[in-house]
Each structure stands twice: as C-alpha cells, then as structure tokens.
Amino acid sequence: MDGAGGDRCHRRVDDGGASPSISLERTCNLPMVSAMYGPQGWADLPDGLLHSIIPLLFSFPDLLAFASTCPSWRAAFSSYPSKSSFSTLLPPILLQPDVPLCSPSPRPYSSSLVPRRPCYATNLASQSMYMCCQIPLFGRFGKRNVLQNPLDKFRFIGASYGHLILSNKKPSLLVVDVFTGVSVSPPKLMIDEDDTLPYYGILTAPLASPNSHLMVTTEFHIFLWRVGSHSWVRRSNLDSLIHRVVVFKGQVFGMHSIDGLFKVHLVPRIRLQNISVDLGKSMGRLKDSRMWLVACGDMLLMVGCPGSVPSTGDTLEAFRLDLSVQRAKWVKVEKLEKWAIFISIDGRSQALCCMDPERWGGRSNCIYYYDSKEWIACELGKPLKVGASSPRFECGHMMQPMWVLPSMFYSFM
Image (cartoon, rainbow, N blue to C red; front, side):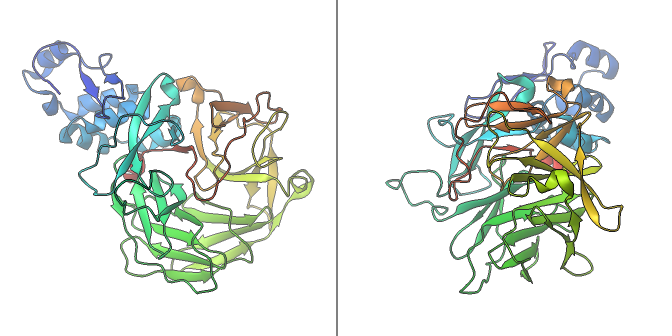
C-alpha cells in the first residue's frame, strides 16, 4: 500500500482481477494521521489507531483486505480484543463452485503444489461484490484430457471452520483451507475390508486449537485424529449413519437420526455417550424430515424441513435442545429473535448463524439457503413463497454451494 501522499487508503485483494477494490477511505485520512503522529508509512500506524478502524469494517472481505495489507496490520488485527465477535456479527460468505470460472485459468498458491480452481465467493453484506477464491481442483472438477492431477481421486466429504475435507480410496485424507489453499495431510486411515470408505468429515475445533480433532465417519465406525498426532483412534458407530455433527459450547454433539443424539468426549479419553431425547408431539411429525444442527448463541438448535430441500409452501421450524431436565427434550422455538441461520443443501457443510443481521442489511428470524440460482431468506414458521429450483442435493461426492467463514477468524479465538 502506498504511504506517500493522497488522502485515501485503498486495498485490493489479488484475485486475478475479479475482486473490486475495497476502500478504507471512510476511516483513514492521511493528513490527520500525519498531524497526530508525524510523517510515517502506513505500515507504521499504531495499533490503537488501527483498532479504531476494525469495528468500522462491515464485511469479511473488508477484514481480509485489512489483515492482508502488511504484517503490522495483520498483527493489529490479531491483537484486536473483540475479534471473535466477527464470526457471528457478519454474514458468512456464499461459496459457489457451480458457477463459471472467475478467470481464464487457476492461479497456483505458493504454499501448495495442488492445482486450484477459481470459485465465486459472494458477500451478502455487499451483494454486488464478488471475490474469487481458489479451491482444490479435485475429482469433482477438471477434464480428463489435462495433465494428471494429484487430487483426481479425491472426493468431498465435509467442510468446517473454513476448511474443505477430502478423501480418496487409499484412504488418504486432506484438510484444505478454502481461502489460502494451505493443506494438512493426516495419517493414512486404516479401515476394515467390510467397512465403507469415509463419507463424512468435520473438525471438532479450529485447526490451530490445542485439542482440535478431525472426525471421519464410515458406515460402521467413527475415526478421530488429533491434529498433529501420528495415528487415529477408532470408535464404534451408533447403529446407523451419522448425518450431522456440531460443536456447541466446546462440546461435540452428533446425530444419526432425529431421536439418535450423542456426545463425543475427547478428554480424558475419547468416548461416545448416547443422549436419550424426548421428541414431543411437534417434533414427532418431522421424524422423516430433513434436519440441520446449528449452534446459535446459547442455543443448540435443530432446524427441520418437511422434505429433502425447502420448496414452495414448506414451513421451516426450529427446536432447542433442553439439557436441564433428566431426559433431554427438543423444545419448539417460535422466534429466533435477533438471529439468522444459514443452511446449505449439502449437509456435509456446517450450518452457521449471524446476530443482528439488520446491521448489514439482512433480516432476523430468517433461515437463509441457496437454491442453485439465488440465496433465499425464509422466515421461521411461515410458508416459503419462493421454492427451490431443483437444487442438486448431495450428488455423489460433488461439492455443492455452501456458507463458509474464513479460517483466520477462527484461528485467533
């Protein structure tokens, strides 16, 4: 960034020309800074001044641009005392791998030799703003007449904390940062001959957390790998396929059916605990419905849809898990109050939430999803007026559009 002259501070995210310039002119005034602190470059601005800028940025692209400006600005962002609040105050980014390429050819990252594919990332806080991130060019993409790709045999099995989780038939796994391309390779997974290949994967905490585990499920077992260790721990499954896993207040909850809830204990040893749940009358009629688990503030919610995907006339409902009684129960939630929830049709990605969405032009008490053409806000408890236009629902191992948060906003928590 140029520190000589002018009264505006601009930062452009380098995306091959697809991203707009992100302006900080409303917060940076060079003559004022020079008068207060004397002549100096932008990299030398004091943390106090930089910390006063950060709350005025209204989107993840703005914050990414701020933190990417130079090492001193990134350090200032890292030391900002309320940075963890951004994960719920700003809307997640809509990752769209199903749209045409953003640029003529992928731009490789210096941190990885794995080929990449440009991918649209839409920011709801500025609907006209598009970024171009680089996701791994695995088997879901590419043409067979091009040079052999080391990820050709990999398939998508999950997304969490800003990372994609890929697996192949070895079976080997790869955890890849969506926005930086940096990857982590766990040890090879040893599975029985009669077991299936991994079909679902999730991180139990941000990758940089001290007790982060990669959790992978097959038909008969759950495997957990503590990030940085040299081996996996295997535990028996709970009689059926696991559909959802969510981290709530530092605890890992999973669901293999609407009445099959369990908790994963990681310390002092890894074990699974069944949780008996009372469904109640209102929950019972949704027993065969599509469900999403989401940690929303102080609530662990289950969002239900009558069909496999929301469509015209459907009513989305939410239920809160009450663990204060002897037998846990799901309690219907009439309003989300100041919250909005973001769900992906592809259940292998995490459902996310946002507080006070009016701050960026969104709506409270709504559930946002993407239907292969546009994002839709459906008010909780009211029939959906605009139906989904035949979205592709977990087509094999193809990666579907999903909501994501950049990993850097987790790594500093």
